[in-house]
Every structure is written in C-alpha cells, then in structure tokens.
Length: 493
Image (cartoon, rainbow, N blue to C red):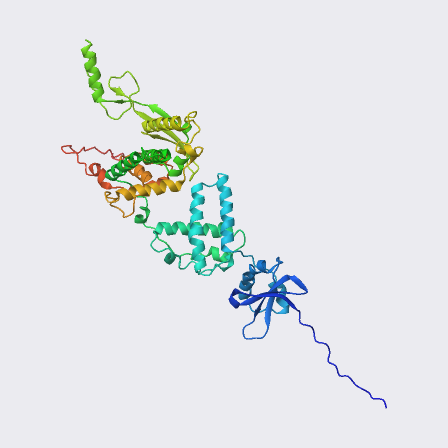
C-alpha cells in the first residue's frame, strides 16, 4: 500500500537583519545601530509616535558608533522639520541640511579672526573683544536655551538676551549684540550653517536704545581726582623700591609712565603698547622763567653790565633763542602712532618730553644693573618688558592695576558729577579730549591728533562741564557802547 503524504509548507519568511551594535541616544528619543552584514555602516532610527513603524536614515561619513553619536542630532533635527518619509520622498530626505555644533563654529570663526589679526587686518584688541563675547556669553546663553547646533538658532533664540545680561550697561549689551550679529552674518551665513531668513530678521535681537548718559562709561577724570590718583600711583611705585624682586619696581615705573603719557596725549592704550622709541622726537622749545630771569639780570648788573628788563613774561609761548635772558628748558615730544582702530597714522605733540627723558634714563640704569651689555635702542618698545625680550605687557595687566589703584583711593575720589560710572583706563583719554575742548582747542585739530571722528567729539562737547567755560558764556562788556552801523540800501533812489 502506498501512502501519499502531501506537504503544505509555508513560503519562507524574509529573515530579519541581525543587529551588530545598538545604543540608545538623545535621552531615549532614538537609537543608533549597525547590522552584522555591514557592521561599520550606522543608522539612526526612531519610532513614529502613534504607530508601530520606524523611520530610519543612514549616518553618512562614519565608521564607528562614537562618531555616529555626534551626527544623530542633525538627523533628529531634520526629522523634526517634516512628517515621516514616504518612499517617493526618500531621496529628498537624504539631502542633509548643513549644520555644525555651536562650539565648533565659534572655534573656527576665532581661528579665522586670529589669522586676520596676524596679518594686520584687525587689531589684537578687536580679536580679544570678539573672543570674550562669543566664548563667555554667546555659548553659555545658547546652552541654557538647549541650542547646540547652528541650525537650531531661530527667530526666538535671542528674545531673552537682555534678561541673561541683566545688570550690564546698555553699551555693553549693544556691543555684545554687534559681535554676535557679525558672527551670524560673516561666518554662519557665508558657510550656509544657518537659515538666511533668521540672520536677515531685523527683530532677531531686542532693541537697545543708547542714550547720552549711557556713553559715559569712560568718564573724564576731574583735576582733583587726577591729583589723588597720580599721587597714589607714585606712592605705589615707591613701595616697591626695596623689593628684592626688581621686576616689580620696573613694572610699576612702566605703568606710572604709561598713565602720564596717555593722560597728556589722549592715546588709546594699544597705541602706546606698540609705541617704539624711534617714533618719538624730543624738542626743546624753551620758556621764560621769571625767577631765572631776575637772577641773570642781577648777575649781569653785579659784573657792571647794566641791563634793562625787556618786559618779556612767561605766557606759555616758545622761546627759540637759547640766548634769551631767563630762558629755561621746556621739552615737548612729537609722537607718531598708528591707530589700530582706524589704521590712520598721526603725529601728536605733547608736553611729555621730560617724562620720556626721565624714563629712558631709568631703563638704561636698569639695564646696567641687570644686563650690563644692553641699553635702550630705537626699535625697542617704549613700554616693553625688558625681562621678556622687550615684548609688550598684556593689556589685561594695565586694566588690572588701574583697577587696583582706583580701589586704593575710591573713598577719596569725588567722581564725575554727570555719571555714576567708575573711572576706567580709557578715562585718561576722555580727560585729555574734554580738557582740550574746555580750553577751546579747534575741534578739527583735536579730531586729527586724537584719531576721533568730529561727530564723536561733538558727543564729548555734550557731556563737558559747562561751568569751566561759564566766564566766556556770561561775559559782559561793561561801559562799551553799541555801535550803530548805517545800512546802505542799494535800491534807494
């Protein structure tokens, strides 16, 4: 008997790919995985809410799970911008939106700025300011908002920036915003790492209205306060005279001289930091000393030489002839500087000739005491660190020790009556400008020697202490009769 056996086997099921490696990412929002068939090809996968299906995308350009983790946020952000893919739209989904971590973008931008600084296109001060804003303020602010990628920046990102920077001056916040806007437009936009519409949005940042009172961040120093500050600096220098570390007394002398030149010439700090000795010319223009004049007249008379006083007085004018009776030395200096801010070269006359002579003599004595075969050379930086190959001291040192001196005398200072702001190192420049305006120096000449735009100087006019010119404002010519000048009418017959 033959038994027939009929088999009803099912068709074979498609085998499920074996997972080689799998790890949860983005706090459980999805997974990164690879399959045994291609263990070095990684995918990002996430569950579509309300369904039992997944959407998946290959992570391009990686061959290990750690590198893959760095790119899953890009795909996650991409998925957030549109509904789940259908096979017909899969090709368009593979077009990756360009994005980058905020920290990496800032690092790349700063490297670019550093190259520009090395090439002399921008100043070290500009680089330092932008770096400070981006590293110390922008990155922490964006992290607080949960933003780590450039394309996550949208129209609402900076809505709370004023709150984040509370207790800072409007001018400081305005400067922050200027730097951040520059980063967005000059780097992220050009590198296509951000949506153009975001950068072009005029309301991306809150409005910051700058008033005249906000421009007093570097208030001019009153005459009384300058005397107090200068006296304290001199006391501070003398304190280090017997310091076994000779570098201390050197630095303090450098700092004291730096403040004298800055206050008497209205220079920017970075301009003096780059100043070399061959950019200074000292000229003896002379002056009349009444005491010396009378002594010389008496000496001549005692020798039987009769001489009459010619009536020449010390009116502050120059005395060119060295044979003039009563003439004594008066040294002025012509200082040539190049502005790092505007790039312009200007020559500034100052009354600091004797200060430079004294400082040069001090440096040569220092060389003799510690470096016997060296002396000041024309190409040396005036305010360079002798103990570090004459390289410049850091800008932060000048700011730090200025704050130290102000802190020592803060209870003695009356302050500027037009603002509650403290004196800064830039206040010495403001003081020079304000004093020259008060003395009536031509505003165009002042613009030339300070490297300031006339419009900026007009703002200084607006915050000048008007009492210092009240005499000329209230002047009355008593007893002077009004002149009646007849008017000729050309059309009278």
